[in-house]
Length: 433
Ligand code: ATP
Ligand code: MG
Image 1 (tube, helix red, strand yellow):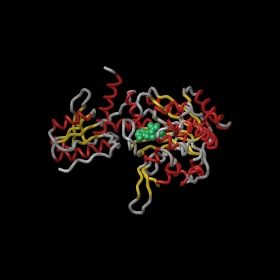
Image 2 (cartoon, rainbow, N blue to C red):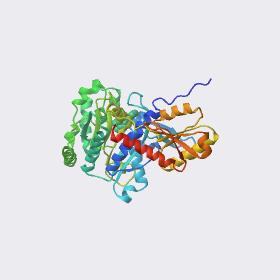
Image 3 (tube, rainbow, N blue to C red):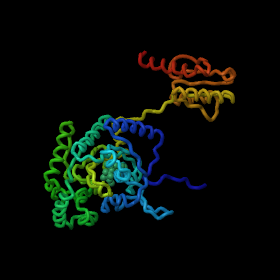
Image 4 (cartoon, protein in one colour):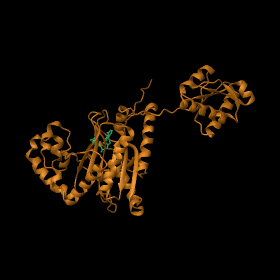
């Protein structure tokens, strides 16, 4: 016997019980995005590797060690499974002149992302993000809008214990000045740096502030703060974001060490974190990235966005009582005999044509075993067709959840009769007993 095949490590099957929760979640998310005027965009899952190297930065965890890159066997092109969506979204906007042709864009996407990380709870190699990008907006208003939208979604989902961390990364020049001071400081503590820290000292010292190594905490805590290097414009932008947040009653904590794992950010950056998910507590992260469009060859455009980790949000949602809306058909059709089976097909299509969800029993079996399946499906009504019914072109209908026995109706009157039963059922529910 050949060995059974397994999914790739860190890449999960989402089975129906779970997938129904995902769909319910996605419905809520879609309504939420529309209520803020965001429009969908769908990009390819595979992109040319240089896109991510240019957008995310060579000296980042993602580009250094997490990308699934490969050579196209047919033409030798270097391709990568997308590790995030912002780069692709901006590439698409530039390629199709979205902002230059149609003005500022509020966009969203969702789908799988791929990073070669060590799989653990809340960290997978294929995971899912919902991403929001606002292209062509320069002001602090859109930064605040993004944060306020998140707060509303947590509220819509009934999530608890999600808190906001905020920082400003200033401009490239301001970061340059801070960088010099930071390198000078870290050089004095070189003996305490870990391998990542030593390697990044001159390439990406800001990322050292983001280290998760507990032994480095004291060193990075005392490092020069970027906030002290911000100029007037950056300060004013950051202050304005905070005014909007205060107006909206959204509490936040300024975290001077919040620098984000991708190179493209400037000014406002934020993360939503929870203490309920252990080490993988960041459920959403984002900020402003004014330089990215020109970095990718587009006419300079300011922009800001964020991405939510769907697996982590769902874990938190489940903790807070979120659950699937189970798919329950209106009708389950059972039948015995060839003529009855053919009539059952017609009856099922007639019901679907009238907007009812109908499951037609497939796979044979006795009436008794079929009725068990009908019960298990959760459908409130069964349609029962035997030889007798088939002979005269009629069907039996039987309430499965409420009172009342089986009645017989013609095929033509079936949808109406089912409607009457479902309606009666509603009345029973509402009226109370
Ligand atoms: P982390 O510090 O946890 O590695 P990150 O900074 O790499 O996160 P982003 O690139 O900002 O993450 O992605 C946005 C969100 O996507 C994260 O806040 C998280 O919720 C989710 N996410 C990122 N990587 C993974 C992963 N490997 N598995 C599951 N979710 C992830
Ligand atoms: Mg990461």
